[in-house]
Image (cartoon, rainbow, N blue to C red; front, top):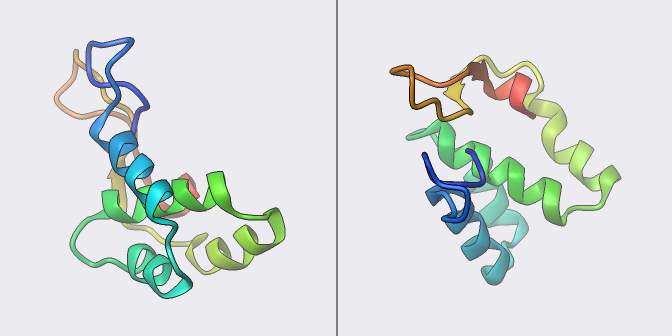
Length: 95
């Protein structure tokens, strides 16, 4: 979920390429709900939360993320070339 690709300071990460695609598509409320409740990958959900943070009004963002504050699904949020895994956190901590 880093903005840049691993080992690069200019190439965007896959997560931010997907975020840009969402920004150009302008998600509907139903599509946003599908992203935030996606069962296959916590990364899809995290990109949905990023989208909300970039596009939503603060009061509306809180309404969307409030149900997920205590979500304990694990997710790696930082790419770390020296370790096998990045920084582990939960979806609840991420939002």
